[in-house]
Image (tube, rainbow over all chains, first blue to last red; front, side, top):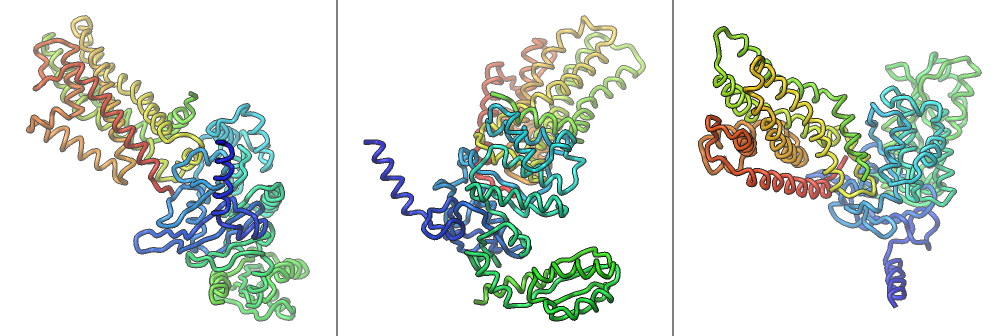
Amino acid sequence: MFRKKRADGDRQEAQNRVPVTAGMGGSAVATIELDQVSKWYGDIVAVSDVSFGIGPGVTGLLGPNGAGKSTALKMMAGLQAPSSGSVRIDGHSPRGNPPTYRNLGLVSEHEVIYPFLSGRDFVRLNAKLQGLRPLDEAVDRAIALVDMQSAAERKIGGYSKGMRQRIKVAGALVHDPDVILMDEPLNGTDPVQRAQLIRLIRELGASGKTVVVSSHVLVEVERFAENILVIVNGKLAAAGDFRAIREKIDAHDHEVRIRSSDPRRLASALIGETAVHAVRIDAQERIIASTGDVLAFYRLVPKAAQRLQIRLFEVQPTDDSLSSVFSYLVEK
Amino acid sequence: MSLTITTLTIRQFLRSRSIYVVLGISLLASVLAIIVQATPGEMSIRDLRAIFANDLYQDLIAATLLPLATLVLSTAAFGDEIEDRSLQYLTLKPIGRFRIVFEKLLAVIVVMVPIVWLGIAVTWAIVAFGNVDALRDLLWPALASSLVAIVGFGSLFMLLSMVMQRALLAGIFYVFVWETALSRFLPGIRAISIRHYTQSLFARLVDDRRIDVPQLSAQSTVIVTTVAICVICVILATWRLRSMSLE
């Protein structure tokens, strides 16, 4: 009798829950649900009346810096309470509900980790606080996932930024959670570390876990997320399949900034390419190129530089460009 | 229960600057004891007992140094992690908030006790130099009564660091205005002063009429009140940790 009642209750609860906005498809029930969530600090509105559901797979939380992505992630993790609305993980509020963390891992954007601990000690600490037994197997597995075996015995204080990011990921995954939240996990990583982390994120999504990764870099998100949620000025600007949103974004030009050893020669080479709409050199001798096809442009630049034997120091979208790209989505 | 958080916090303390400040404060009375001993002139046993018991322990260590040293360490227990945003490595775990608070307080006590006892023992040894037997009965009451200050102030200041950003300043204000100035002139406040309980327990344990504390509290009152302060502060700190927004 009790079981039946409980089953009926669960069904009713599932019916009341938010459908998936990003993840397995519209009919599935979401693992992470935000229902009319707002968050404000005094007069500043960080997140405004946002509702969505996220199912298994990798979902990119995309938006310019200061858009409200980190605040949304912190509310999903229960670190902050929404000013209004509700956040649920597997049907339960994570706020003031420690058992939720048996199934949730957060990789925060903050760099500070206990510098006096070795990487292994840090992962072990996470495993111990999760109550895992035996510890060693889980710790070794998590360290191997981020390919940190060779540096695991070193103190975190001596780690590079990329290594700190990876050991934080290991700490968040040591208990093999089904829900994983990552706040700008690729920040500070070199290209090899970045490729490894992207592969790991994709594998986690493919294995059926619900992975939410925030980023402000469009091309980066495209490499690991099938679905995206775009947050601009605290509001949900777009949600769903990446390609559909991408088409909308690609209808507008993007500005990319390039620092190189010979900007004028590189600019001359780029100007004739079809993906490049305009090229100028700013006061700091940096190329500012306008393109309608970012992916083709990112493939084109290193090839041109290699052909002309020019060294590249930086290739990245300008902040202005990012903001305007996201604003296209709000304009509708 | 494995004391993972206590162990972690002790390691944090041992490599922080706070530990040197606490050590320095604790040894300050020893410096004064050296000056007293170096002052020319013969001192009677009675004078030496009064110097250690009344001047150095009651008026300096219990009244000022103990609260200040405890303030520095207990506000760092949570304050540093809130400031550098590493507290989430503890709060994002399936463990009760009470356990986090309890283990943090335990770490404060475990680190404070040997440092404070070292300061008291060194001070006593300097004053008692050459007259150890005559001052022997003063040492253990000083060590025992210092526990009241460590537990009482430790839990109070740890709570303070969780409810306000400038806990160190507020704590200094509390020590000098409430515990020192107001409790001296307003008898009612003395009854709810941790310093008064520390001094009362010391006076009771020494059992020497020359060691005087106005409105002396009973041993049982001291112990029950200190435990009550600690329990209330831990409960409030647990509630605060549950409702706190973390960056």
